[in-house]
Each structure stands twice: as C-alpha cells, then as structure tokens.
Length: 214
Image (cartoon, rainbow, N blue to C red; front, side, top):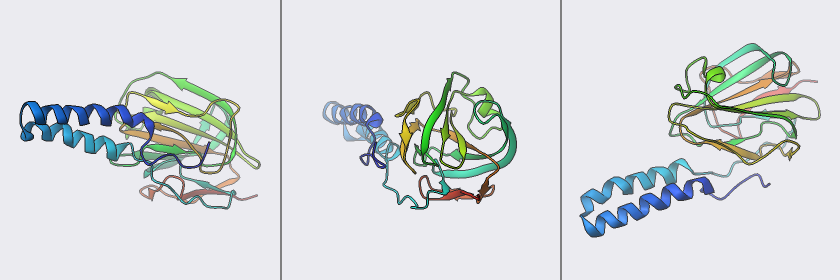
C-alpha cells in the first residue's frame, strides 16, 4: 500500500454521491433554497473524507503522529493487550473538523490486532479507551514495539481498517480511518522518548511524537 491515497478516500464516495443527488433533486423539484441543505452536507462530507498528502520524516527512528488533532494526555499505563508491560500512552483527540485517516507511527509488522464492540461516548472522555468501540494493532518494529488504538466517538459508528495481521507497514503509511468524531491512542515502550505534551496540536504522518533513544 502506498503512503498516500486519493485526495478523497473511497469510504466517502457514497456520502458525497447521495447528498449530491439529493441536492440536485431538491433543486429541480422544489427550489434552490431547499437544495442548500443537502448541498452543504455534500461539501461537509467532501471536507471530512479528505486525505491530504503528507511529508513523512525520512528518519525511521522517530514516531510520527497517527492522526491529526490535539494531544489530550501523555500518561504512564500498563498495557495488557500487546506490550504486556508498563508503557507511556499518547492520547490524541480528533474533532469533526480534523483529517480522520490514520497513519502508522512506526515501520514494522502487525503482530497483534483486536476489534472490540462498545459504546459511543464522547471521544474526549477519559474512559473511552475502555468502553467505546475500538480497533487496536500491535506493530513490531526493528528497535521497539507500539500499540495503536482507534477509538470511536459519539458520532462515529464505524472504524475502518485497510490492513490486517501480518502486514508489513512502512513509516507513516495510511492504515485506516474513523468515521466522524474520534480518538487515537499510541502506547510506546520505555526506549521511546515522548516529544509532545498535553495541549499540543499534531499532524498525522508529519508531527514527531516520539524518538527511539537506543
């Protein structure tokens, strides 16, 4: 899979097409004022499902942000899904206006994956990583391992993945998206120095969130 997809990901085609047809029908049968609503929705879906190209750092010893958004927390946790040890977790909140495609922070092979059905609480709540619908992948790199989790928000109803167990991923490669409001978490081992803090704005595939130190 290439690092970049078309400017609009295919998951958005049906939303854009349906609202475009609705706007056309409303304009022809009723009037242009009524057609404004579906036309605005079409513009929103075109904006939401955008997939801008990104300049991925060439240094594969750095971890890039998996998503656009704001860092909500950097904390120490114990991961019992993949890393099975104490680690540090970076939590990134994506508003409905952020790019919602996700990129793998580190080149490596998917050694673990887990999809969990759940609730749809607001993505900025502290416990959404445990209660909400989510999809996790564990990536084994050359020098470290990471766990990346996509978490659905109050508006999201589907997490999309374009990869599966055993796939070899390149640095910054697109691997999925979360439809509408969401949150993305990255758990890293202790040989990764975190380079972001709570409140920072990050750009998926470009912002360095960590650096391998050994």
